[in-house]
Image 1 (cartoon, rainbow, N blue to C red):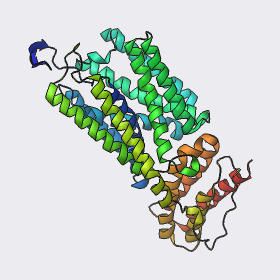
Image 2: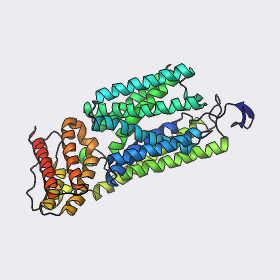
Image 3: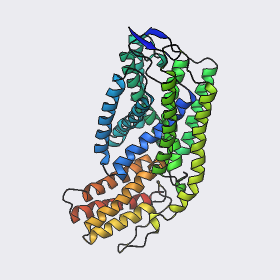
Image 4: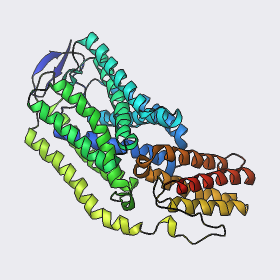
Length: 416
């Protein structure tokens, strides 16, 4: 046994290390929701804006998660910054797992949601059979912590699949999705008040916070023409990251001041104080969104659709297409095709980056309207990106890919 100083200052014989997860407080849930958005937008930023691509980004995130997870598992006590960094990375990889099955393998969201639900049930069953507890207040042995992180990874995959199923396959959209998932979490809280056990209440809420955070993130990042607030992914990510850093720094100070809780001990910080900090973080996000939205909207008021006409005839668009008005994307494709037809492959490659970014930014808003049509155009865009970014691009291959993309856009515009 190891003698360790507890928060009250007394010495006690404890297990090899103390509880490795934070207390479940209001601050915990605020950080969890915000970290969900950070995880998703950061991966998209690396893949699209930085230009690493999906494969490289996925590999990099898995590698960083592996390194961070080893550090977390080797740690002998709860370290806030390390724990929450691991959560963010697990959020990224969990989301990438679901996206891989959906976007790369074409697995139905109904199937992936069901499969991840079964996998999570299996993890809980094995965990219970081995430890006879699923309580996160008892993550105080290496084996329990491994079960815990395995369950966390699957909850993110399940939350992503379930959230996408609701907002895309069922066409609820991010606004309605945010209301629904917030309402479901409120129901879990109410059920807890009238007798639902702490363990099932925690895990149900943990799964639901993933799609809630994604929906809130989409609400803030999407352009106002799509029903969002127009802050953009970068501004939203920086805002959320700033709040997370402050709240985690406070948690780090509390750990340094009060020590790490032993199993069964109460949290040293009052619930009222913690709730005040959590509410403060939420208020900062809301106020910043209110202040920044007008300026961002004004700054981005001129869209790609207003660019001057190119030498190539513009593609006719129709706002009654299944995906809505495709004019912004069609104009960019027009520009790229015009450059390619003149043999300016460098200019075409530069301009197609605008298409990639615009398409990625609009995904959450337009994909729910018609997922099948979205995938058709997404595949055509990927084909164009591959042709233009080939090691030795050719005008013939680029023109063929662009012609196919234009055909897909034209076909969508004819659908009512």
